[in-house]
Length: 306
Image (cartoon, rainbow, N blue to C red):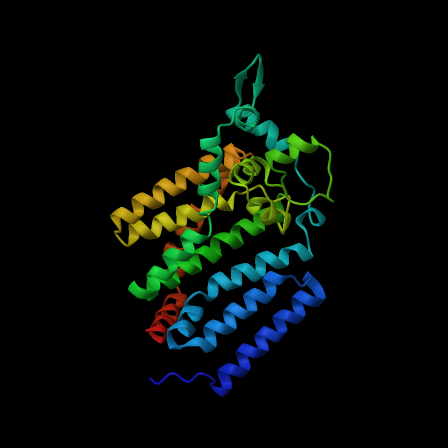
């Protein structure tokens, strides 16, 4: 099929969606440079070539994830349900606390005073893998198995929807919040890079500080979706029988889980609940979605991408 750069119907739909999105973020969310970059990327992929158009179509579930996540700032979860600050801390201390310098501390409190430059850099590198690795895997699947790509990206969206639902059902403060603000509620604070500030300082960058300053939801420690993404990625790597890639995914998974606690962004219970979200997603996808009409729709959609 000959590539048509400006098909009338599709062009009208894409430009209409772009305008609607810009109006949404301008009037409701608050327009930022990354919104403009997102629109430029999507329209550029659509009008670029036949291959880039198919890449955009294949990654549509990732785009939907971004729009939903970014839009969560319109209705913060602390306006829906009470924020839990002390309870996660007490549970963590009861389950995983240990004696240190004569008092019982959480792992986060131990790491707050026991850091090392090598661990600081390693934790930052692992934490940076949370989205780039799944997207890189998705792009690889685009050229190898488009149906598996759709399954993977839909699972990625689904695990986020599960996680977002828990964010609103149980707003929870991260360990760094307790470290900086105690158990008092303070809804006016921005996100904080916590232990990842050491990564910025050592390398002389402002990476994590700028990232967390734009955080859409400060009280979203439970579940740790950083911990869910690599488990979803590992599952599909194993499903594809990619031995080397699966080993790399496993190392990244363990590294992110460790970094989440080491950097004081999550308690161990947050990590475990994030993993539980990933397992629930896999079960729902395999046992329900693939046995429903969605399976047929996904197959037809994958055929369009070939």
